[in-house]
Length: 222
Image (cartoon, rainbow, N blue to C red; front, top):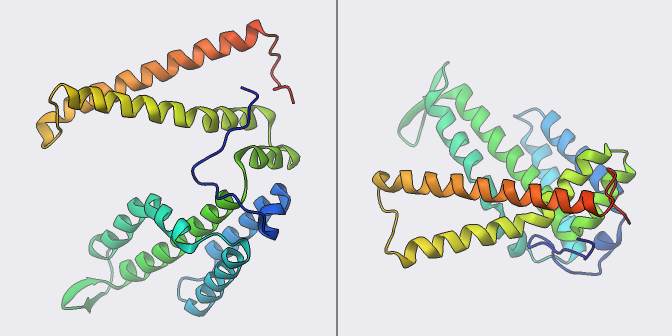
């Protein structure tokens, strides 16, 4: 429990961005995200400036751009929603590539896609240049409630454990000839997800009891 724990999002380096205090980087990310969200959706020049700032930070950090871009897959649900928005929104209609869509929906979809992408890139840059334990220490320094910091700490520590358990369950299903190809197999996947949740919950209970038996009083030792 006391050992260091790396993360797949972190890119080891020694740049000025890597060496910067974690709490300052968290504040910078928060300020950047608030600025992006507050930018009117038709100020495309401002979005270009935001992107240029991100490119400069990534360049200074010496994190390969492909390293960050490959991890933007987390944004896929937002991209799908932004693509659907022009088709489901109401209001004046306009034509794009021969397809009639909502003008307000189109503008809102573009703004959502741009703002979401900038936020994801900024967050990934922070994760790539800051160790998880440094992030947690930075949150403590910013006076985030101790209980929330501990919850985040355990989430980071056991994310790989739960992911490994999920991979082992997948291998076990495939070893028995199971291959989810159509909706008829969804009940099996649902039962697997339920079993994974129960196992994770029981593991958490055992860890908590072990901590109490070792004198845990609500604050993790340094």
